[in-house]
Image (cartoon, rainbow, N blue to C red):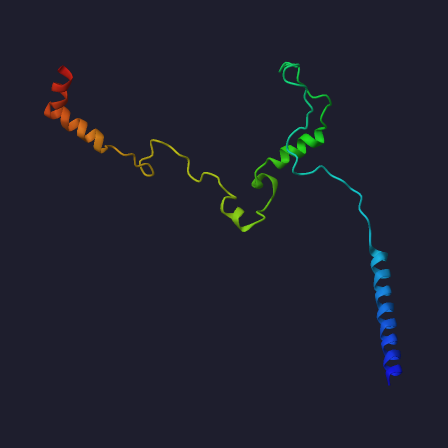
Length: 141
């Protein structure tokens, strides 16, 4: 009995190994290595090795190498707000402020939409004290 179980287990192991090997061969057939490298998106500053501050004046501090236009454009693109980078909002939170155009032009003369405070408590008290003459007597003395 034990020998029959061992034979069955060996057959099952052989079958599972064959299936596993076949799977690996199929994966390797379609596996492709990509070797394209890009600039790290977290770099937003120009990396400059500077001299000691006592030795070099501020005017003499310049970049030792010219920076590629590609890197400058990439950094400028990263600093843009999301509505300038993408056509549609990527997240639900970006939906709220995506179209932030002024719907009505703000004019100071339009009385329908502008309600300025005409008087305040301080101004009201000052006008009342002027009328009663209490401020005038304080200024004279």
